[in-house]
Image (cartoon, rainbow, N blue to C red; front, side, top):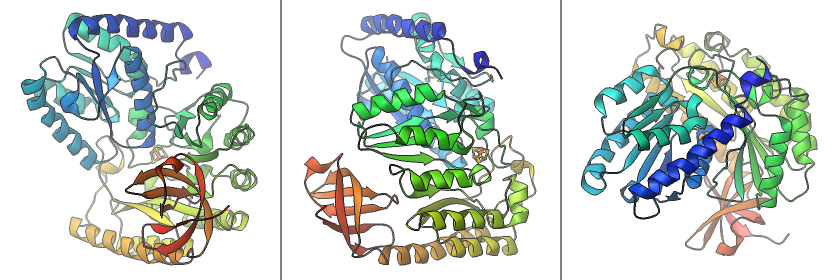
Length: 471
Ligand code: SF4
């Protein structure tokens, strides 16, 4: 892939921004007030970041934002395709818009986009059964949103743009962030790994990285605007910089961001164990702004299942990586994702997962029961295990992890941490420590968005509580 195929041209971005202007003219004729948009995001932080870019476009078209679909002139759902459950929720919520549109606002524009819409069978279902949806586009068309909305407004017809194409990177659009002190910063898009259960490579395209200069410029702007936490985003951040050849890898990028002036912290997600290098762990250990948290999805502890999943590492490889990480950063928290009940998984395989969980001693786990995704290799694999059995394994895994998490939490009582205070509710602040642990402390709203020192006084399984401490 050469650079021309990866990046949307400057001219095309300018053309789309001109569509923002044209759309705002049509919108001012259609509405006698400042139009309001309600944007709801399903799924991962990558989607949240895409929504922030689409909100930037909407803002440029003259929209303000509201909290309820009932108040909105435009409703946008940015959807997720990772699990069947998430898809069912989207259909339910789209269905709920129909009476709102009929009863309250006939002019309401309903927009569906994101990973789910990039799948042909879903877009077809919307076309056939949800006639009140006005605009549908997939992940590859995000940068064309202004043009698509303009066409809908001008031609007054339904617009679908879900064709499969090479995913591109579009620089130069405004970004609308709801919070200034925590920021998602995408560094790459797509994935080349084709894990056998995962739909992402099909709906988000091949791996492609943003250029370091663009990322650094955005990071500097975020810091200047008050960002205290920057989370670098990508499906597999560990392979940053390969396409196009950026002249530096993920560790190099972290070091450059770490060197920027300002009191801020760096997080990143998601790391693939197969590409997680010792260099990266050393970089984490040596960069003072990188937090002590590594999310490293293992998915399973059985080598046989890992092979079937096409993950590219063994349980031993993973354990070695964790051992090295703990050696370099004794205070590191490792978290992970685990899929229970992959097609053909046996009790013996599952026991290996439990064993791995006990050995790594994750600080927390995101556990999922396997959900088949149409079009993936795993969806065609025989799956003899009963759903009831999978449910039992799932509960067993949660129980084992809860015990480990409780032990971790208890060991923290009496310790003091620096935490970023994220919110306040009824006089209780919620902060997040370097290890990404949530802690509640009594305190004043004015501390939200700042760093504070907190001492743990009480430890539950999921959260810690404490008090503000002197520095
Ligand atoms: S690394 Fe695997 S699980 Fe992650 S996005 Fe790529 S294909 Fe999906």
